[in-house]
Image (cartoon, rainbow, N blue to C red):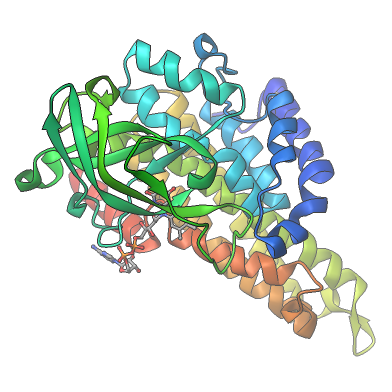
Length: 378
Ligand SMILES: Cc1cc2nc3c(=O)[nH]c(=O)nc-3n(C[C@H](O)[C@H](O)[C@H](O)COP(=O)(O)OP(=O)(O)OC[C@H]3O[C@@H](n4cnc5c(N)ncnc54)[C@H](O)[C@@H]3O)c2cc1C
């Protein structure tokens, strides 16, 4: 068993660390206030080959693995969870095409992403989030394709995307077995993207609704066979949850960095905060959760790269990192005291940003359902 990254992996992590410090960190607070994704960051990240890492070389991608993806993601999200998410979440949108798309679909829809374009993953609906099988968007067969009717909500990067991978029911009576995935191009008549939604945190990453009003989608944009959408989505989540776990690892690292620096520099009752055991123990606990979250995340990513089934490990990594991030952000505020509550210091943003990690890509409760189901299966 090796606990060491390769020299190439260390190099890309270091490149991402420097990029995050130079290009993301200085913009984070303003992007949060303005609720805007700074597009120039994306252009620079594309130039350095730091995004869309797992796109294959055949479509112009870097052809790297999930381990490299989590290493870079962690660094971006240490600097800003909002900007980091917007930079990385293409990997969720293109995974269904990688796993379920034809050669022609891959060439047509993945190559533009390698050039810096955006795509979105559209599963959640106003009436169905955790209940994936309960989606109501309908795809009705018509000559040459399908008519899509319904709506999607909370779709990351939807205002920036050229296309959406939309999950719909081709058989309304068949529950999850009636679900099919489609590539829906933005600008298709009947497809509208709503305004960016107001959010507690992660404000630099735009999130919007998508409305599908009798939108025609040609047959050649269906991913796989009719009815294959649910299995495809579950396979996608096994691959994407390590990345979301890395969002949490990055945020926890930032909590540790900020809290440690503050606890060293601020004194109370004649000594630095860090010399008060109650504060020191909080820092130690943060470091313990950081290291555990990081190892779980790397393990889950490694399983993806080995082509092994890692459903349980992906859910454990995602749930653990999300819960640890929320805990660490809460304690970071406590260590900062009143200043932790101030918008002048970075930890209140970490606290607002952390919460979403327990909600998207399957809530912390849903991850526990999956873990228990996998335990029962084994
Ligand atoms: C900022 C942001 C970005 C997002 N980006 C995307 C995206 O790009 N694409 C996309 O498709 N979706 C996206 N989502 C949606 C996200 O995946 C859902 O919000 C999430 O899956 C939860 O669904 P819900 O909001 O409908 O909550 P609900 O499913 O209504 O859940 C409400 C509560 O009930 C609990 N609960 C529900 N069912 C169960 C159960 N069976 N067992 C135990 N507890 C249960 C949940 O854990 C939760 O605490 C995003 C959400 C946010 C906030």
